[in-house]
Length: 120
Image (tube, rainbow, N blue to C red; front, top):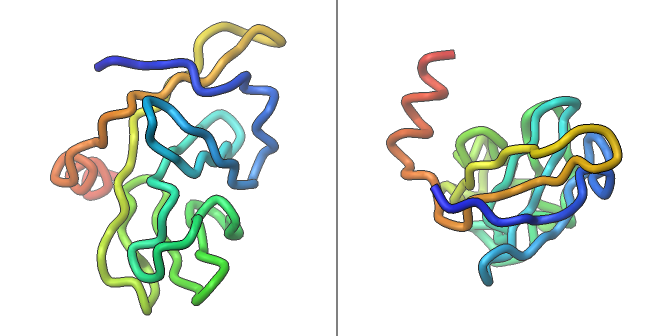
């Protein structure tokens, strides 16, 4: 994996979506306590920014038509979206005020994300 610095961890408010660009790819990043998720910042239904949507639990809801996506896998959970969005591997490096979020700008293969979800 080839991780790149996305932003200081302190820039990510817990339970809110944020737009970041890593390696030329726009991503919707969500911090949920100790976990950080990154999804393609484009709804697969309406081609609008998911980073402008609402977070509830492990889902990110598109602001335009209400499609909800699983933060862990990118799978759509409610219509009208029927296609998943890409997910990206994340990691936090450092501690305290020096912690930064790093993201691999290459999408996680969809089949490995599905296997991870099925294992839970």
